[in-house]
Length: 222
Image (cartoon, rainbow, N blue to C red; front, side):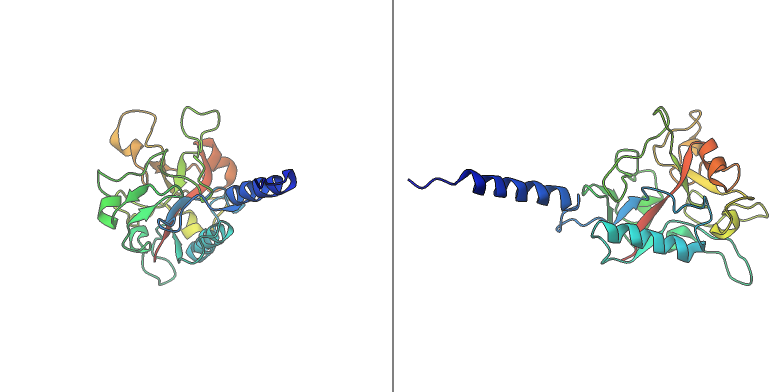
């Protein structure tokens, strides 16, 4: 009877472990198309504008082997310098979107902005498949930068809602949503994943002060 040598068994075991550690959390049959950024780029709400935020989404996706898709940050922008407003909902493609573990977050743009989406703390995972801490955890990071209204459009009015269209890391304010759908009270707006309240300012300290870390949502446009 042929038996495998201890050395061969050890090599096979190591190869299996290496594959388990390096393979992405999503499967080829159900590739990731949505995630929350695992970290802020480093300048608070100054993301380098929409283009910079998109590039950051793309880079994080590349890091986990999901860069074949075109990634967009879920961020609105207000009219400025002769340019029209940009709606977050118009930037992310038609859906559906699945997270790093294959769970469907929303089936379409309308579903995403309706009452029956599946975006919550358990499904709003990072590109690494990790849960982001929320209200009630030792560190609360549930504030997600969006600059969006409930239906995913840019806010109107003179008040800054996008930290200077994502170019300010100091003065200004940005509308944030709560990925865990938990607020300070039971009022519906405080539970919104994309439109809960404005930040205190645009620097990292101010974003942290209200329960955030300068994180934002990324969707695969196609």
